[in-house]
Length: 350
Image 1 (cartoon, rainbow, N blue to C red):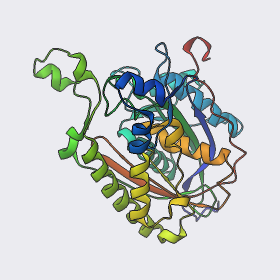
Image 2: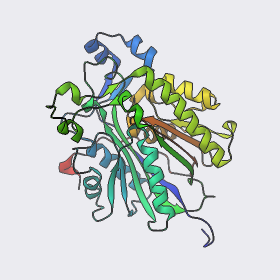
Image 3: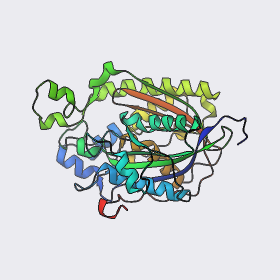
């Protein structure tokens, strides 16, 4: 990169982590009094991965982070950002523990909670940190143990969510390089907080003098409103970053949207103007993994040989808050993606 060229963040490595336990629809449907066909028709989901009761989000994050670092020669990085809405505990943040377990003690590390938009939020923050010149590299992880916060008997949420993690390594580079993060946009609307919310556990509950109630500790979702606003905001955010980048919908080689469910993915692609065959879909295999879904979808697409250096990628996501985000980049020349690794237990993390 020449001295007169603006700095940008470039993807240099990628990794993923999935729990070893795979849960097919038959197991979920039997518990909920549903059918496999009902779940497939409404969500497009066939299976999901569920972390063991002894596991936590940090275990998934360490697995994905380690694989991402290894994929590009295990470089030292200057910071760690963890996108998650299912931290190991409400306080402190989970990212410092993940950094320490990855041998990155001393670097700044913090959580980003924008729910399912979290990975793009963290990618945008990381890109900005690198663009300032204060940092040369960073590790961005999206990791979730969502099933721990879902009522196993709720017909709306229980079939939809799964656990997992994905990560990318970013380095300082130039905007003309493959892998460069080009444009980003983020937004939120707190007036719609209640369409995706976990009521219990925060200071508002304590201030109201409300005792902890187990049902209040589970994620609540108003499915129809989520569908409506997800399509609306992912489409608008995508149109914004496409205009910023100077791309038209037909210029997009791959749409990698948050894997909420197949109906939302299909409707969003149609609204943006990207053909359905150019939308990466793996929600059928991993379900909705919240902030982990976009990097997991990237690893899946790499493993199937669909991504080529120079491909123009559009990211978009929608999550609780409500939040939304989108970004564009040109795909880099990376080594073939390894299969997602299993979680790293605490005892063997170092």
